[in-house]
Image (cartoon, rainbow, N blue to C red; front, side):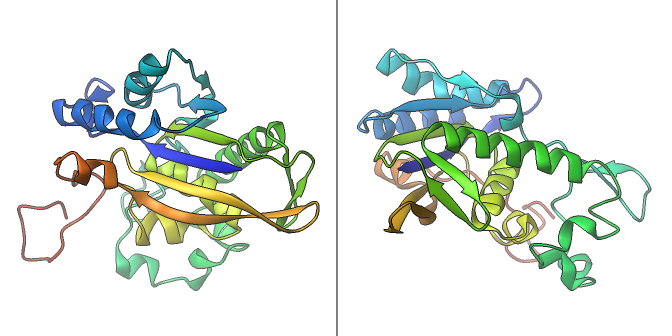
Length: 241
């Protein structure tokens, strides 16, 4: 089985849709995805994800099933400096260096920072959601591996968001999402591909064959978006700090 996780196109967050660049990216993504025989499409309920999926779905005459747990991950934490609610990602290197448990697959969720809001509950909701989806397609999460109830070579496509993509990958691969939120970036319309490997009958793992692939943008002459990145050097104040 192949699982393709697609981030939405370059976003206009003010209207929960895409920028003109994002619409161009979605068209190039369509040219890529329509070449595949896709068994099922799933999508976030948010506008920018649905708008990204639209070109592909319209071209194929298909629809995507909407799951609320595929919305951008909305678990919150309490900022230790301001006391305000904030996202669980985009922390500074100095902050992340304060506690080794942030990068521990078992301990991160119980650290004072990540347990300060509703991240544990929201994380479980997403994990339960992806487990149910994969079970529907024949792969049942069983500890650190997947029990194969119906082996197949289906391709399944999910349109969602970078934050929740990291949660999905962390659960499937049994790693802390903090690693993915802060040390990886999936740019707009990037495609992450996981493929099952069943070296033992009835037992499977998902191997990441490609993370954040934007080859369709290069092929179409479309520059990559900067969304979700931060400044390459501190002295570059034209880029987000």
